[in-house]
Amino acid sequence: MLPDDYELPPYDGPTVRFAVRYRAEREDDALLLARRLFAELDQRIEALTLTPVEDDEFDVWLDDELVHSRRGSGQEPSALRLAELAWTRLGGRERDAGIRATADR
Image 1 (tube, rainbow, N blue to C red):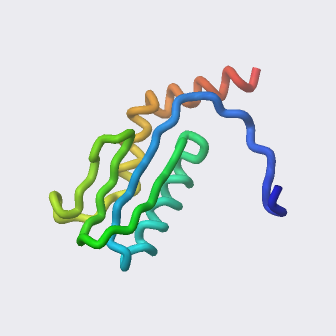
Image 2: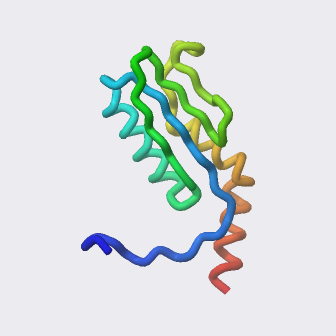
């Protein structure tokens, strides 16, 4: 274990997978997006893949579905919007709270 590792409570609920394709020069933005998603969803993220590409892209897939295309929308991806989409796929925050309450018993 790394020195900063700590025990996390077990989580066996639903998870999501993210894939982000971004222009290589935008790596800092992609890393910031990943940090924000992990801060919000933590262990509910099964996998998050960052892939630099040559094209001028900043696209995000959630469970193999394209949910944001900078080229298509003309806007940068929003971590808040992506997290809300993930919560919807996970069954909502209320469902997640129910899983935690059951595990605490």
